[in-house]
Amino acid sequence: MTQESQQWPQKPLSLWRDAARQTTQHPPLQQSETSEVVIIGGGLTGLTTAYLLAKEGKDVVLLEAGRLMTGTSGHTTAKVTVQHDLIYDEFLAHFGHDAIEAYYRANDEALRWMKALIAQHQIDCDWTEESAYLYTSQALSVDKLEREMRAYDRLNIPGQLVRQGLPDYMHAKLALMVPNQAHFHPVKYAAFLLTEAERMGARIYEQTTAMKLTDEQRPVITCDNGSTVTADHVLICSHFPFIDQGGFYFTRMHASRSYVLALESPTPPPQGMFLEVDPPQHSWRAANSTDGTPLLLLGGEGHKTGQGLNTHEPYEQLLNYAKKTVGVTNVHYRWSAQDLITSDKMPYVGPITRSHPNICIATGFRKWGMTNSTQAARQMARYVTEGKAFLSVSVPSRFKADPSLKHMARENADVAKHFARGKFGLVAKTPADVNKGEGAVVRYQGQRAGLYKDASGKAFLVDTTCTHLGCEVDWNDGDCAWECPCHGSRFAPTGEVLNGPAKKPLKRLFNED
Image (cartoon, rainbow, N blue to C red; front, side):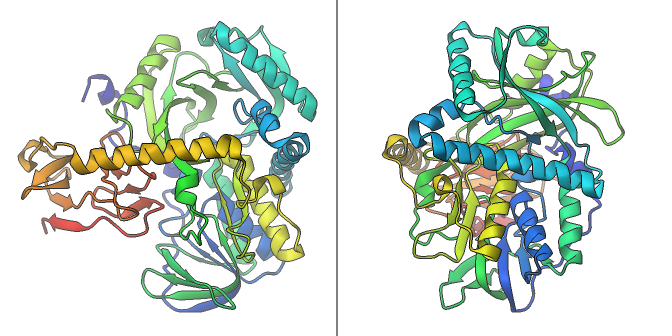
């Protein structure tokens, strides 16, 4: 580990999750239940949907495989904005004006709904209104922002090109600004949704993994401990759908990992939320530590999950960049997030297939889950309570040959490459090469295996074959996890599932009791 990496916390922990350590935990489902609606996933999409449906008097059960808000929703930069990177010009070319105007309006209405809810109930979640900016420091990218501005004009998005008054350390040649956006504390906000949903009768279960769905007259969800839920509607808000039903979602999405440092700096945080449009796409916003210390959230350095070579390097790159630009006094938190990106970059919200209208999914938010989770939840709630159709542009059964076909071919070729590399690549390390607090792929009894030794030296050995489709996982030292480079499944050092599509843990080969 380099000298720089000693300056950040030893283990990754998000600012949002740190503030929520004392939240009430919910028991696992131990019996069989029946409800009108079962929601799979306890992030912002699932909790918002549960709140909306419980408010309408629906009988709701929510199942979370781990703990609430421990997935992407608890590891976001929490920008609430309709400015979803450079995307509207591209979307207009692929989907047309009416479809993308509907997408923009759904996200804008989601932002306004969140703002009104927070004001009405005086939710203490650090809601702060600021402008959002896309910027470039590269002359070759100025044209991209100008094209995006023209797309804004066609869609009536209130944007403005800005050249003056931008932070000097960003060296911005041009920025595209959208006013009246916001950032907030997502876990504090989610706590309100949870409390209210339960007050109105929703039943919440944690540590309950949905394993299979029996598609009978009323769908039946079977969980890892054998308990079941029978419901009229199944709403899957679990990042990656736990079932496929012939939708082939593992070929239509890929997982991307990005990184964040929450740091203290002698330079005041910028006024506004900024995203660089050129790689490594640095992201900037202000926040406050749990003790009120002003912090700067600096993000970026993204890559496909499981395909980062030196997994400490993204954090080191962010730290070095921060030192050069704003200076660093202290790093309070570091964390990473996993996001799913669909083949055409548009989220999937709606029935999982045309033949399963009562089984719906919401996924593929492409790093913009704060408004997309809310607009997806509102669509799902209206679908259940009113029978209102989903936005046609986001229904999962859509297929656009450009860019979907090219993307699927490229992704499947990438999967094949990493499958072969994992199966036939050489493994040089032995168990003796792994120190306390480290993990690595090793050669054990002539076979490829994954070894992790905790701080006390206790060893855990797992089979590195991913339980999804058989690719080989690699060790992410920066985040202390096993990651699959094929479809993005992630596992704890001891083998438990952290992120799907895998549902079963890595096979345990050996551990010291």
